[in-house]
Length: 384
Image 1 (tube, rainbow, N blue to C red):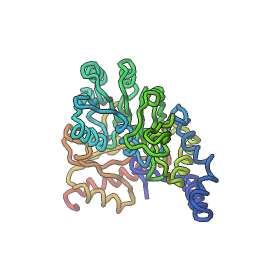
Image 2 (tube, helix red, strand yellow):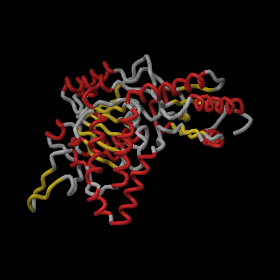
Image 3 (tube, rainbow, N blue to C red):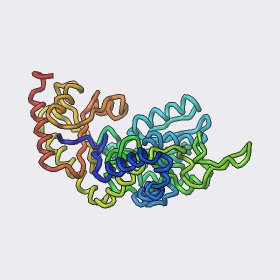
Image 4 (tube, rainbow, N blue to C red):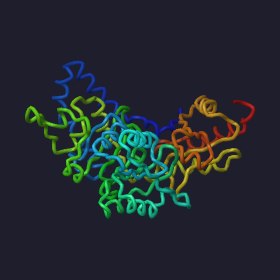
């Protein structure tokens, strides 16, 4: 099996799996509350390790059940009013786009999409800055690396304009954390969300939210806050805690939290800069080979795409093509028009296949996957 679906889920490293199993065994032996009490320091390393990875403090990190859970928590902390503007890009993640539409339906906000740059490098930052000045948006939102392509958006450039104009800035870093060094101070974001299951190689059902000191000091809190995030200080009054813990709930899947902490420590040992050299280089090798195949069109834009290789292939339908790759021992993922309405309309495709290597994959695996796609391209029209 060749695992080229790391943009979906990376393969967990042994220390990650062992941390989770050890805690589950402890819960079974002495009880869930007691196991948590015995592992308090290890649990706190979830916040400490992510703070080290992102260049922030543990008190700025909140655990979440997924990146989307973190994202919706962040959105719920913003007091949107009718007529407020959300300024975003044409390449923001599908669930984020749906959340914006839901806010429009419920609160009457306006959604403005900044145009892409004509050179295909991603959002036109100058045009986006002009829209910031024209609309004074309640929120600016951008996805660092879209799930439907290898495009890397200039999130730090966007952040500089947001700081200059004192605008709230939310970044979706779901596909970039674990693949690139991500520094929240350099990006200049107020809020950042990601998952642990992808390039961080953590377990499913886990994610996190970074919350800046500015957001905490301004009193932003999630719409539904519980006894972990606030204190009931009088019969008619509660007080949010001072840290990003106000965005967490009282109940945690502690084995998952410990697995995430182990995954982040593992990533720090491997080295984010080393990963940022290795992983996109493997993807570039694959992308170059696929681009040379008749009937195959690679779809990734930008001057230095990430390790998400997307392509369309003539003569095949989506599910049969993926099934044919599955049968050849290659893990992959499909993306459909509904995942990226603007991007796929621009590219005139209804679906694409996504291949996403990671640093533990090899050049021989890249060549084997390219050969499998070449074989299937040759079979197009005869086997579907």
